[in-house]
Length: 448
Ligand code: ATP
Ligand code: MG
View: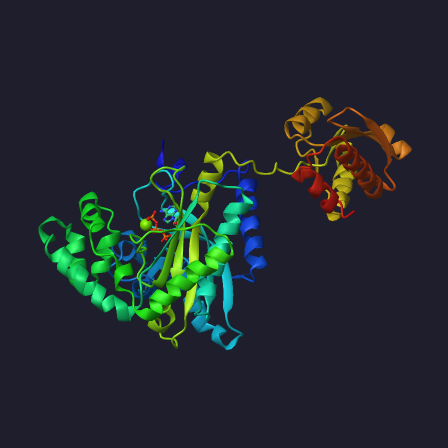
């Protein structure tokens, strides 16, 4: 295929026929976030490269191999965001959000960019739903964000998704742990990949996160950080578990989880599914008490997570979760000829002003062709507008599902059409136990 009509590798278009599903997922997670008191934040797609070097960490895969970095015309080094936390933390500091009541809870729905090998569930442009809770140091804060992610999975009735938790301690306990790791990896030096060799001195914990099969096999037998936790971190981790127990959120402790970004401390967690292949981690997060200070602010505890929207969608598909149907267009008005397009466009416009979805002809097609189109578009009602209708100020609205027709006055058109859709919705509700998304939109959209 010629380059011009081929999207870059690792990107995906969301076509009009599919976009409502993503919109539904996004609306759902946003609503759940707001139930927990999180408000949306939007930050730029690109930031200064230094922000990610400092926060994500120089020795991480993301910074070493995956970032889209370029020099702009002003000779600044710019990077497309590989994750959402750094931009939130930067905005938090830049706008003095620390002066507001703590904790500051924010969420985002955002695109991220990583130069990775594209495969199922792994793209170069992907999307994350993320939450950040800044200013709270307690185990309850960690448990609350875990509960938020769990609520999302529960809402969609996903069962093959398991919560795994771990603690990676604080700089105090990590000192001893690093020594033990160094000792262990020194003995395997000959087999480590080159990137990991360079990590050995700077940040041996990163080796635990290496994707190379040899390194990950070596990492399996490495000492685990849980055995090195200081008293404070140990108590914190136990208290997180107590909170999860209290909310009846099931979890397993996986001492192997270290997370791919440098800013994590204490609690780390992942929600993992076996239904979507090798890229099974749908959500990852944890506590990052050091980040704000690392970016030049006063020390401030924080925790958060990032959830991959594409992986969530894959999981919904794998588990055959039914999403609500796309709302249907409520009325199609077919002008009998182009002479009536003025009146048709005026009527559909009036309807739209009242929140009713309506279409009319934009191609000067015959009535037959218009009806074919309306049928294909699955509209709920149709109506023809010609000389008879204009003269009598009356038209006939046809219910496309059952063929029923009703007369409607063109003088009191919007109000009468609202009545017709309300009657149809009530009849529908009376007839079926299953309300669908369309019914609600019809009722709300019609402002009734
Ligand atoms: P992985 O180990 O799969 O590379 P990660 O640890 O790099 O994941 P995070 O940085 O924690 O991922 O990002 C949070 C979430 O974003 C992941 O759990 C996943 O759902 C999603 N995600 C990360 N990278 C990609 C990608 N390249 N394509 C699609 N989704 C991704
Ligand atoms: Mg990764």
